[in-house]
Image 1 (spheres, helix red, strand yellow):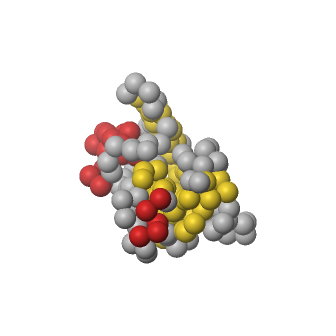
Image 2: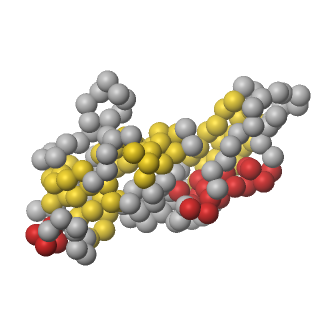
Length: 166
């Protein structure tokens, strides 16, 4: 069994709203690659479906919870811990998924409290629909607090880290 056109359209909408540039799914001989361009909203879809292939149905996450990608960092209005956190920047999740601080269970965390990060540094991984997406920092500074536990489900725009930009 392969994906029907409704499932493919749902997947395309989810990918385009999640901020991911490319998704490839391969199950047996069924292959689908969806590429989005973060510039103009051009999207390329490649679907290869051979006839008479038996496989398990693919479950597609509903796109209703996904929203258009926003910058991963925004100023904090008032952090929950104390008024002194007002000058910190939150790094927020660009997508729904599972938050991982390490590239794999036997490796060290990408960043720890006290680490200095720069723009483009990988700070965590978010797994969405069996795809592991490296999240890069859009700010420079020092990690003050990790706001999410490793291996936790996260929502779109959920604060992940507090960064002191000074």
